[in-house]
Length: 149
Image (cartoon, rainbow, N blue to C red; front, side, top):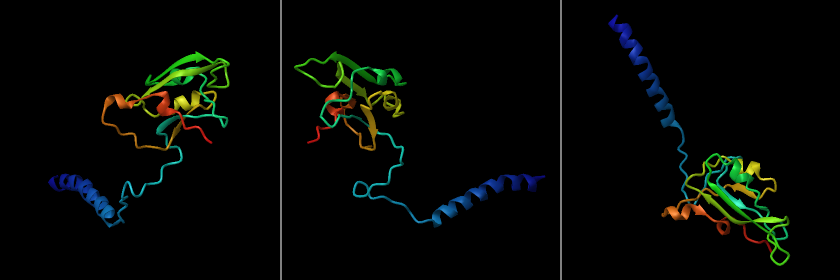
């Protein structure tokens, strides 16, 4: 009885040591970050970006569908009407205020899927570290991609 119990206990321990021994023989995959960067997976979703049309107008029309689709409730959109003097988007409205609380964001991509104009996209920029909590509230100015020339 004692030998069988010993064998049942020792078998998983020896199996675990075997797995460890196999891992020790493999070549190490150390990446010298930030000089070298590891390849990102094709469906990686990290930093939010508000895109523009080729003409420079914002794609966001202030519909708040992204905020409605967000399970973490981290997106706030305040819409305003376009005028002939000040036109920010091709539609009737634009997002006057667009904020994302990155501390609450779970990077699910639902905002990107819900957007009818493709205004909000998640890109592969994963360096999102900051020192202050206030710096994690991304405003519209921080999210908008620069105007292409």
